[in-house]
Image (tube, rainbow, N blue to C red; front, side, top):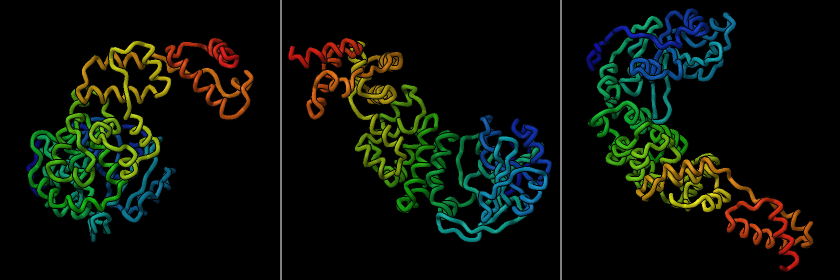
Length: 403
């Protein structure tokens, strides 16, 4: 690719993403002839990866953009007018459109911006060179900071001075590792790591929600091991995830080809108290439950079907499969892949009696009902969870009669 890593603009041609040819998107672009594709869509197009979101930038003011699109019958949502952003619905696809900007003032979390018509000025405020390119609908790429060459080489570099970029938004220190995990190859940029290490003590001021949002994306990368190691070496991991103590288990999950699941990887990396970790990172209720459920016993790979049914009677299949992945990642011997397949194939058994059945059999409501149910369920579990309702009622009748 053409274009040196300097302030000089490089312009070259590339095939635009197929989404730009969609009728509704093409109509939108026709209404905004000065607009260009920016950010991740350009990066992923050049990398040959699927393009998830279409983000456009334009030198035209947001009120002009909104009025023009509304006059053409398109729905426009004022998603971030203070920062020059509106979202247009092109068919069923949301397209974010932002007026070119320059930073006036930043405090490490929020920026005050002014609008501009200078494409380079807008690119200069972005985080990384690979995110600072723009592309016309015809496929003409504008690259001021060597982003195309960095993308081809697997380099993640900040635009301009790394310390300045991080001071503008401290979350960029974590974003660096997210992009390193997905696009980086070889040794990370030393200037970036030096600036991140210097900023690491300040990252504790970031909100838990923002930290978990970035950690989740890092851990969802196909192979986050090297990025997490760089986080540890830079001092960042000790600040944002001090619970991380089992790096070998994370590497074990990747080596075992476990799903690229951030919750499963978090459970491997941070094996301590799941409730405390969930509270500190402000995980959702579902995330906290899954993290807790991943801790616990798992039948060994050689266990018979009766043992697996007993486990499935008390624990959800998904949680047992998570536990099997974690056991394999931590080096426990056995054919864990076979065990996961068996767990997935076995229907989860359900104890067929309830309190009403016990009362109907002649036991008065009260603590005795619970005691009888517990006794019956133990018998049902010991038998491998195969006794049906009829067999359980016979056992109940025998219990009531004292035999």
